[in-house]
Length: 175
Image (cartoon, rainbow, N blue to C red; front, side, top):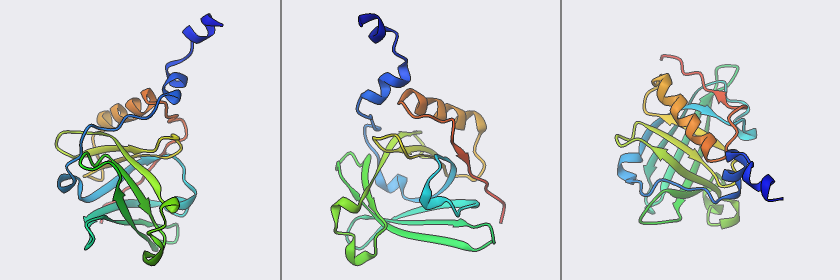
């Protein structure tokens, strides 16, 4: 029994631990436009074919306004508006996001976790996930980031217990 514990893979061990976020996020630096580089397959993004972006701003209530966009297979723009509520102020690395209609966003059980797991010092690339390790995104300020940096972020996700075998790479086309 002890031997089985000793030989357990790092990935399995990481899944048993709680998920660590970055120590602190400066929201004013995080706000703005992000391009999706890669994601775990998600039912609510199944129609997205290319040009997946997220724009974050602060709304009139002091919460994070989320404006997600993408292009579907027919070339139509799809848009999803939501609101993010920081759940660990003043560290700002854990946000609860709701995409319910604005009048219903106060319902706390309809909010999903959006945890910032890794971000570079210049706020040019971010790794975002959630504690069950079902969702994962690699985001970049540029539509075509350095592939070595993307690989670094994906490898880091593996050390946290995420499987990256099913990652979907997002196509970003030039306007």
